[in-house]
Image (cartoon, rainbow, N blue to C red; front, side, top):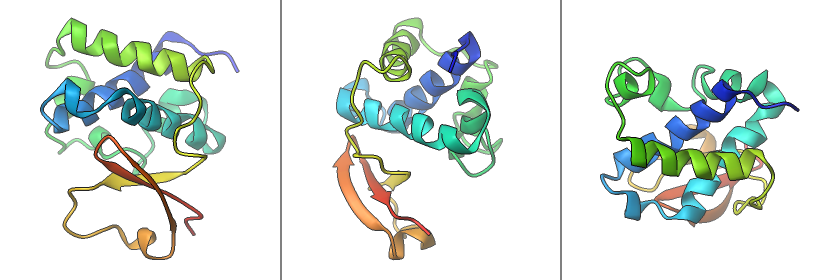
Length: 140
């Protein structure tokens, strides 16, 4: 599949948002960043292009208009260049197939800090915890 600039930019912004939610680039280590980027690759099977998949309703909550970082994702507020550049490197490595999937093919994730897990997590198989997120497979 060919990957255009938008398909590289959108996953980069999701990685940035997950890092921003943790308030520190160091808090979301590279395996966690790769895991988030891999979620876009795995979900690609249900959409058209990375951007289309990432921006589908309920795929990644950071694209909801009420999310506190949404203004950064749509470029109404500026993301620091070095931060977005780091996230773009991670996204490019994943979309170019240079980084293996650290989640083992999981399809869903949520933040470890959530007070109440999503309803779909009850019957799903829990996979590794990476970068402040817990990943799941066999979600029905």
